[in-house]
Length: 410
Image 1 (cartoon, one colour):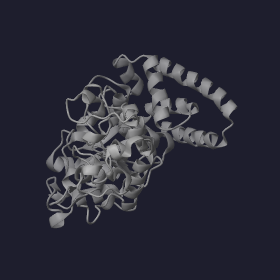
Image 2 (cartoon, rainbow, N blue to C red; image 1 turned 135 degrees about the vertical axis):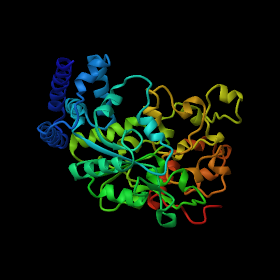
Image 3 (cartoon, rainbow, N blue to C red; image 1 turned 60 degrees about the horizontal axis):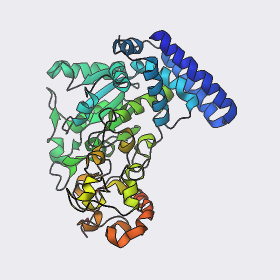
């Protein structure tokens, strides 16, 4: 398999060189050289675990074609031109140079479950397997004082180098006493702040860690907030959704290994390669939306013919995520594909604002822009311009930075 991976990199390199000659793109050439230098620096460092990417691929029966397809898809997902494919292939091999510490706070462990999904060997799962996961409360055998010692040693040994993944919101009520952890009874907020001090970057995974999620829903009795409301002075990457897609977790770590930097982020600190898409614009039911064909009630002819779910409360027009492209469970399906409208789980305050089976027009809250407050029927063919509505909502939501708006009810 090692020889096959080398063949893949040579093949991509040959193709990329021809494309680069034709492109003459100075920006990407400079970025390519920076990534090349960073990968060389990583390769000179010792691996942090004994797992070998090439051996794992061979054990799982992955062929060269499988790896080539994954490399091409990963390169495209990171919004990089094909010339970067050989570097992406090499970065996948060097993922065992990326130390990761994973904290679980006020959560349901859904993102850890997504990370560990067992629907069959897949290359992005193998990539996650070889990451040097130094600490994870749910997965590790150690507990009590032994677990705390393991965390302390990992933070000390990899100080300034580890990526800190955080799952779950942080309760601030009662001086943080709603959530404590470990034999010492450390509060979640102190636990997070201590672990964040030595991190190279902090990655908030899931809606709870990013914007507070369900725990922060009204009346928010525990005073739950997201990571960015607690951690200051560190690069923060938000990967929302309930749960977050493992492909986006892989993308963030792969980008960091490839470049040594966090990916480009939007105003809500979400990586643009994953959240630069509006669900509505890539929805398989978009043609029915444009044609004014909607499901009016569950089980009607529209539902049987996969018509648009906007009238049933789909929040795709105001939600930014790539789940309509990447999908879940080996890209088999996603919520709208199984007949359930989007509930906007990658947006701030989604549980209070979007998680109901009514269109925004019938909601008890005032939408950030005027358009979606009208009914679908009033819009008629004017819905063709609805793309601007979602973008406007996103811009307003970004401006408030995930904070709850005062006077939410109309």
